[in-house]
Length: 514
Image 1 (cartoon, one colour):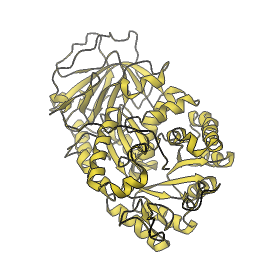
Image 2 (cartoon, rainbow, N blue to C red):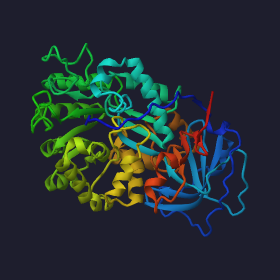
Image 3 (cartoon, rainbow, N blue to C red):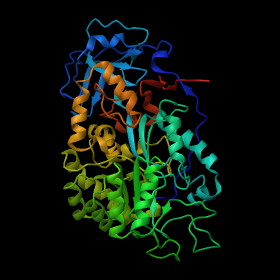
């Protein structure tokens, strides 16, 4: 959904991070450990290792000391824990109880007095867009060079990471072609040329002819302007199949399909100019979803109308983006499927005047209607506000709105960590095969675990929980997450950020070298 948004400034030039085990001694926390803490209630977090004492023989192991930590699996806090991290690979080796006679080491990361969380995940961003209050979508896609847009995306990536979001899914470069593939390489290991979150990409997204933009004011029947297209336009079954294969070959982690769109926006202003209509036939959508799945790639479908949502669910779409005009029927269908719904509240709330009151009211009412189902595990929700048209670094807005409209704070955190990894992860982690892989991780030796993490790549490792074998993506926030949720998860409250064992922010200040 691309609508006008508030103004946001562009963040400063990024610098190279220092790895966690190379940091100068950290300022020790002043708060004492919480007394009377017990072990974890969740087997996903209470871990020993086959050779737990031997991991200190590995080079680059350091400890993260926590007095209060969130466990998404049990949707609760656990207290007084020590997380052992292998810095070079960025994997968690163990999570154990803090001894009563703890002696701090110079390499320890002491986060006592703050709330420790798994790194947050945003399931819907556009790093190659900036706020429409600065520059309209049409101007960005036709007047800004790809070099400029990539520089901006680099700054957006850094700003997102500093806000505590250690992984994102970018659902389309919006005219920047395949630049997300190159940006991912610059962010990811082994290069790590720039700071940024783990970056799951969808390349150009796929639309049908005449349904998207930008459009020339002189040549109204032509796609794009001077060769620049907001997405890849295709028609017919074979062309749809080819587009999926091309984008997969270009490195896409996801395929994004526009199931419907505002195809009458070029006509004279009318009641229908903002309405969405299907842009692909059922057969075209089916071949794209089937082709992607055959290639081991999951599919996100932009769908505003309920009919489009129902078709996408039936055809096996993995996530639904928006679903703004769902009714009780569509919500019931989502409850009975594995498809994950991302309601993108932020893009609607920040454009309340543009979308109109009935549209806004329907979106909010639908979310309120499914909160209890989602809390009970009967419906799968993703957390991603369509960041980009509104400011990068304000990614927490979606979490804040979910809480504002009825979701308990700890469940919002679960959806934005463990739940969002399930929403954006690769297909190889899905189903029974994926469950078996997760179980196997706990039985690997430390050396085997390090080798697996190094070979899996940034986007191939499990995320969203603080447990053995998962990525050392760790943040810490000041404030009371339960009593003052909106303030506690705001970017200003994020005092510590670690991604893949590398510390990027501590004491509220980016830890970077010139």
